[in-house]
Every structure is written in structure tokens, then in C-alpha cells.
Length: 568
Image (tube, rainbow, N blue to C red; front, side, top):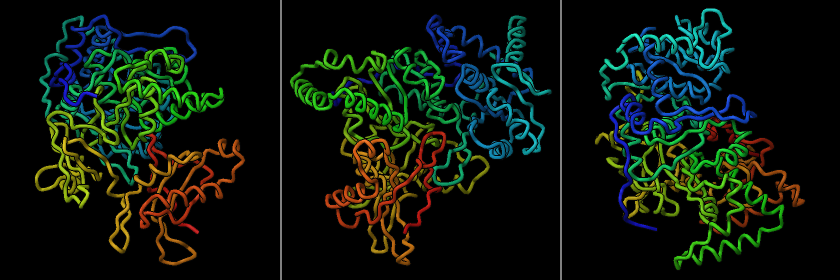
């Protein structure tokens, strides 16, 4: 590993219109966006950077003529070429973009439209059935515009027609798209947090927030030529890191047709890197070892890992020829995975590193646009979420004896505040102007960040002892047969006012059945072993077995506040 090596070259841009113009001039014939209209199609549709630029300009000019400038515009739908280009176009004409989760109930979508004061909603065909209900519940005059196809609802407009009109206007000499002077520091987007611990808030981001986050982040790691867009577009991990970050660097973004097709898509499209949440990486890891086990080669592979890793210590890297057949299942060109959004187990990182795929664990939060820190291509620290991006200051406030405290952040990527919520905004910043993330962690001697847990999840006992559930979850997750686990303090029904630490486990029932094990008996025994390896006040006092997986939001994070914490 290289402790000190130069920053990578990156592309600087002040706003998203400059970004789309610059990259089209630099890489006009490179593929910008690719996708299939139908996942079973043989042919892949490809849009070059020059073509994407013209489409963005056409959409923008058409939307200006429709009166979208300085308006709050909702954008709802799955990831698509239209979603990406509309997002860039709205940013380029001075609209305030409000990305909304397409899977929310109509009533919640309506609540967001009202809270964000949207005048227009641009949506995909897949959510058209919700839009009339949304308009009715919002009780506001909303112009509805359908992406990618003809709307079946009278009175709704079509994006294709708006773009066609914009193209005609451009060819006739309309310069309204270019003439608008963008203020990169003003409100550009309102992103409603998904709320794993309660109701979300409207995070206000400027183009400076978004552009600086990607510019300063991309100095640290090298983006490879092609990725697959897997994450929901309404979340900043998708819209900023995948769309803005990759578009600015001239990478190809292949749009996945959905999780059921991703294994086939990875083999067929041969991405050189992926941007994922830990749950997805966990599934890849699980599938890898399951396949190896079915072939009866588990011990053989572990032995090869040991030999290969020892050879690497003396400068001999044979991962290519040794593990080429395994990497073929990932398309054969996959060399890097960037993971963020939740804690990532070190054994996942180690396994992929052993076969020649680098996993970079990072840390981000919507209020920071979202990237805060990340490991580097050729330098990672075990257990760390990396070094801060450039121009980012990280401070640990009120650290304990271990140096752990609340992670607070200051930098050009930190939000403007919460929309129309001055009290929440004031509470989110400390007296020094640092944003309070609500996460606990520590910095090492080199300034690298380590996450301990969430402030809201912290278990505080009456004796003053504090327990981070995430620490225990990481340990329990390593027990064979654990699919998902959440740790919390629960009150026993049988012993009133007695608080114990509960491990709520959703097992891998197929694995248990294959090994002839009873879930409760097996995990009770495994947790007793685990308890013997940790300090007594952190010991698990109750094991609860679930029949169904935990409820999750669309970012695939477990919704903790929905968990029933009463135990027998």
C-alpha cells in the first residue's frame, strides 16, 4: 500500500451546465449513458457525451419556454436516461430540483410536493397511476410531465414533446439556455432524507455543494471507464456520486434494468467498477462462497488465498491467473467497488481484495452532498472509512477516553440548511459552524476516520455505560447463518423495568435447513460463545429470531424506528 502518493487528476467545474459543456467538448464520442429498453433485448442503446449535451440543452430550452426557471420542480422515477438528462437540464436553467422516491405512497409524495412548494412534477410512466392521486391530495395546481413515453392521462404533458420544441427553438436561435447566469451558491436542490430513525427533512443543496463534493472527492480516487447505475436516483449517493461524479469524468454509466437482472448485466456489460451499498456487496460475497461450496472447493480457495496473499507481501501478484475464473462471474473487468451508506464488514473487503477487486469503503451523509471521506485506490486502512475529501474539515466533538465522539464536518459540500425549518437547521450546526452528523467516530494520527455508530442508536445504561449497537452487529453478522441483525436495548415483559441488550436476528433459513439446525437453539449457543469474547456489560441478554427480513427504506437501510423492541 502507498501511504503517500499524488492526487489524481480531475475535472473542476463551478456548476452542472459547465460540467455538461466541458465533458462534451473533451469526449464528444465517448459513451455517456447506455441502457436497454427491455432487459431481454440484445442491443444496448448508447448516448454519446455530445448527444447527451444536445438532449440536455433541448430539454432545458423547452422547460424554460414552459416557465420552469426559478420554479421548484419535482422529479420522480427510476433511473433512466431521461431522469439523468432532466436533472442536469433543470440544474442548468435555474430550477430547484426536488428528487422524490418513486416507491413512496401517493400521500407521502403529495406531502413532499406541498412542503417543497413544487409547481410542476416530472415523472416516469411507472408512477403515472399515483400522479392524479398526488395532485388531488396536494390540492395545488401542478403541471404534470411524463418522461419516456406518451402519458395516458388527459392534461398531462410529455417530456419528448417539450424536448422536441426546445430543439426547434435552439435551431431557430433561442439562446435562453446559455444566457441564464447561474448562481452556484443559491438553492439548487431539496433532497428529503429517507429517515431510518424518523421523519425525513428537506436538505437544501447548492450547485457549489454538489460540484465541490465531486471535484474534491475525485482527487482522492480514480474512477474507471465504466460503471452500472444500481442505486435509486433520488438519493444523493446516486444523483451526485454516480451521475455527476461519473459524467464529469467521462465514464460510461450503464443503467441497470433492476436487481433481478444485475448478475446477468455485470457479466454482459463488463463494468470496471461499481458503486454500491454494503447490502449489495454482501449478496455478491454470499453468492461467491455459495458457488464455491457447491463445487466443493471452499478449503482449496482459502488455501489459494493464503498462498497468494503471502506472495503479494514479497511483491509477487498472481491474482489474475489464479482467480480469473471467479472474476469472470463479475464480467472479467471489475477492478474496484466503492461502498457507502452503512457499515461494511472487513471480511467482505478482504475476500474481494484476495481475488483482485479493490473495495473502497467511504462515508457520506445527505447533508454533505453526500461524500465526506473515502479510502484510496492504492491505500486503505482496515476498519476506516477513509481520509476526508479535499477542503473538508472533520472534528470529533466531546471525545471520550478512546477519542470517540460526535463527527462534525465543515466544508463547501455542507448543506445550506433544512428547507423552511430554521430550528432544525440551527440544531444541526455547532457554535463553530460545523455540521453535526449524529454519527459517532474517531480520527487516527493520520486524520483517517473510523465510524463507531449512530448517536440516535446509542444504548445508554443507568450505570453510565454506553454501547454502540453497530459494533455488536458487526460481530454477530460474522456468525454463519446470520442474514441480518439489529441490536437494541429492549424492556422485558416478564421482568418489568429490566433493560437488556437484544440481538434481533433474521436467519438464513436455507443455510440452517441444510445444516439441520434449529434457529433458536443454534443462535442461543452462538451468542453465548460471542458473549464470552466481549466485555460483560456489552453481552447480549436475549436472542430474538425473526421470520421475515427487516423493513428497509429504498436506500436498502434497515428502518430502525419500525422495530418492535418489546421482548419476552
